[in-house]
Length: 426
Image 1 (cartoon, rainbow, N blue to C red):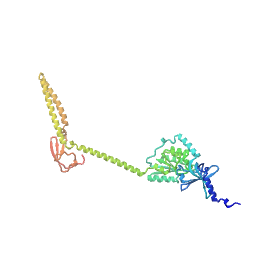
Image 2: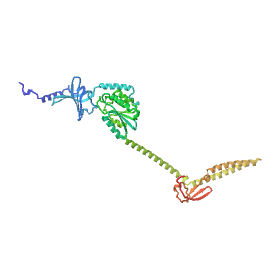
Image 3: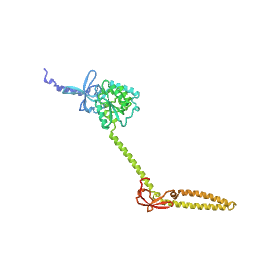
Image 4: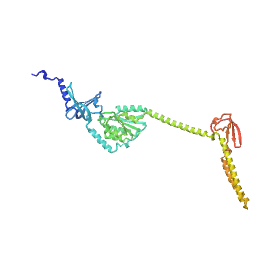
């Protein structure tokens, strides 16, 4: 008969199994390949799922400390290779695979299809950067292609109208998931390309979802519709890692609908601030230029010729008189010399008169030129110099007063006058 010492309690059994399993070199630091299903993202940051192959399944845990470096989001049906340990949960007597690291195991059928289409369209130049149209700096009207009831359209409207309150927006409703979604998106893009709408830029996309949910934006007809849009178009498909093909075909791409609205619509206040800045800069430049010209004019007015023109005129007149005397002396000397040379000539009288006449004519021409340059000659042509009682020259009416007495100097004399009226212009 068996004694009590021959039995194990359930707890003891589970502890024994746990010890054997968790210390086994065959069940620690192992790689397991499988397909993800029953995927759950817990609010704690832990990820729970099952790994399966054609015949079996095993529960798996991917705790937050281990998955924080994961570069992509896990999805149902994703084929992965995991690294970790087998652990035993004693209370239930169950075991699971504790994942320490994870990587994708190649690509699925849909991903293969995407890669093949990407190569095909790329060879046609669909994704060439030189074919991308620039986005308008200040769109007056934008078009939206998305589900009319989804979060994406609300996000785009909210961001766009916050940035530019009086922006015009036209929504072309489209199915973004399920049967006929591709054709619905294509028709909506084509509709907004109609010139009657005068659309400046189109935002087309949807919020985030699973790989399958977003797959319509990898369909060939949708990608071609993005590339063929006459109106600049922004791809606004919510994603974290993998870019749908429409991102490559569009003129610009954003990771969320809200981000697409920020790309398409400028902030009105920032534009107004920029206009004010430029206006102030132009005004400052004009004022600086005016001040420079004022300074230059003041420098000119401060020159001696404008301060004491009569003194300059008198000095020039003395120079001209001295020049006239020197010329007369030179002429007389020349005449005397010629007379001495012609004394032996019988026709001296005739030649002397001719020489004198020629020299006088030349002299008169030079005197005439000198007189034309003389300040007195200028006054002789009708100009006058206006002086105050202190013999200061009056250069502007701004220093004159009604009733003030002035002297006006002409070429042949001077008169006195009183100011009876001051005119604002000539």
